[in-house]
Amino acid sequence: MNKYISILGNLDRRIIFLLVGLAVLIPLVKPNWVKLPIKIDKNTEVVYDAISNLKENDKVLLSFAYGASTKPEVHPMAIALLNHLFSKGIKVYIVSLWPEGPIMAQQAMSTVKNSTLFNIKDGSDYVMFDYKVGGFVVIKGIADNFRELYKQDYNGNSIEELKIMNGVYSIEDFDFVFDFSAGVPGNAEWVQYACDPKNIPLSSGCTSIMVTDAIPYVESGQLKGILAGMPGAAEYEQLVYEYMIEEQLNNNKYINKNIEIQKGKAFARMSAQSVAHLLMVIFIVVGNIAYYYSRKEN
Image (cartoon, rainbow, N blue to C red; front, side, top):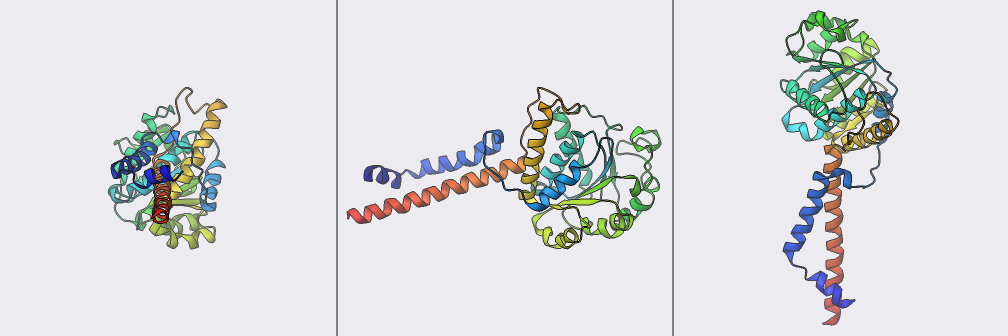
């Protein structure tokens, strides 16, 4: 026994580096291989339940207000939410309140479409609009007169020609609003200038540093839960993953069969972090035991 402990205690550091590298790499490359349990926060469950209660052909407005610097935290939420919405046959409307918003929205939509899980069409199942400058003024415009603010979609098509725009004139024509935010304008502005005055359900996914500012709105019921940073994204991804696996087995008409459903990037990143931390703890424990036995022998 002492012999093996001594060998582990004197393990070549290059082997340690290799093991730590593999502990990080494997969950990132093959997230479906990792079966680590994940504890779901109450606020994440509230968001999931709110989206799950929406019905086929309901209309959901998504606001993209984040950029490249906060993409690792917020972007996985957007992809997971789009998967959740399209798996239920919900119509998606995308606006951008940050200059980088249209790029983030395009990338998220491309990820979802390239998965080939859904047969979705631009202008029929979803529509994107270009960035509008003005912050909370734009939010007020969306709340009062959507068509006055947006005359055409991101591709330059008149909204009068888009089937998905039938019956959409103001925020009151949407069944739910979801805000992806990393600053101002963000969930606070959506609460104050649109959703609370018009009594439209609102939820949000934001960076970890913004959560403390948003919690009062969650506790008051003005926000239907919140996805808090990368942990919140990973939790939501896990819930959506389990839901879609079950729905695919039950022949959900919106989810294509024989297409493997992948876990999201936030789950992969949190798994990589957890596995690497666990491995380092094991190394620390083994190292201390080996040191103890070496002192004892001497």
